Structure formats: C-alpha cells, structure tokens
Length: 198
Image (cartoon, rainbow, N blue to C red):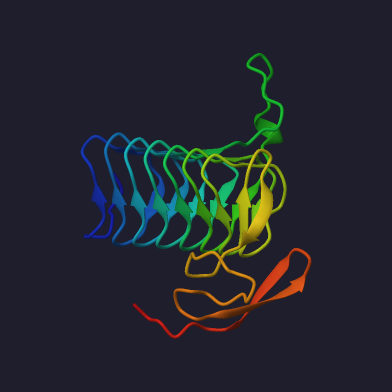
C-alpha cells in the first residue's frame, strides 16, 4: 500500500486499491473498499461497508455512514454528510445486458450538504450548498442552496440554515442567529453570520 499520513486509520478488513490519496486524520472502517484513483480529503470518516470509486473525489471533513456506495461520476465537496444506505446512481436507464459505462453522468454534492438515510440521488444533478435531503427522498432535479427537500420525487418544503436547522418565516436560524433572505422563488442567501461558535 502507498505511504499514508501517520494519523490515517484503515481497519484491517478494509481494502484500499492503489493509487489512492487519503488525507490526514481520515478513518476508514470495517469492510470498506476504496477503488483506484480516488482522492479522499482530511478528517473524513467512512463507516462500515462503504465503497468509493473509481476516480471519485471526496473533500475534507466528509462523513459517509454505513452501506453507502459513492460511484464514479460523484464528487463530494467539503463537509458533506451521507446518511446510512443513501444511494447514488450513475446511469439513468441501466440494463444488465447493455454496457453503459460511457454514459455515466456527473453528480456534484456541494459543500455542507446533508443526505438523509435511504435517500436516492439520481445522477446528473447538483445538490446545492448546505441543502438537506430528507430520509427516503428521491432527488430527480437540481437542488438549490439551503433547500430542505423531501418526498418522492423530492420537492422543496422549506429552507435549512448552514447550521442544519429548519428556518421559520423570519429566516433566522434558531441555533446561531444567522439571518437569511429569499433572493428569488427558489433562492436563499445568508446575509449575516451566526454568533454561536461551538
């Protein structure tokens, strides 16, 4: 195996195929498999039975819970949370008897996004910064920044703050006091940072 930073932890039951780049402080737990040419950032945690790659890029401080496969074509930016058994796809119309590896679509999950347990992200979409995908939702279209998405197919049912709290009509985060404003029917922007730092 390639030389890794000293504080990387890879459980003895996990496999890391070369070449792979794994950042300092990252932990890879039981029965996980990292395929070749993947980049995993610093301080990530990959739970049990996680598959990554090939050629996947994962940012810093990402948390990928048990039983998640991050397929080729998926990019996770920094601070992304993937809940247990959430699903990424990479082809829209798979058939076992037809090879479609040249049809993989890109899926970008932007900084700070949360994907709930058992949610499905249909390939070819971008999930906006700090969006929140509810457990069991099926995402079939682009997701705006800060959007709270739920249902099948997923629809926006509200807004979430950067801190992960649902915003009320005043658009003030109940956790840290950060203020937001609607910049359009499906657009939210942060106008002041929260005061809480813990």
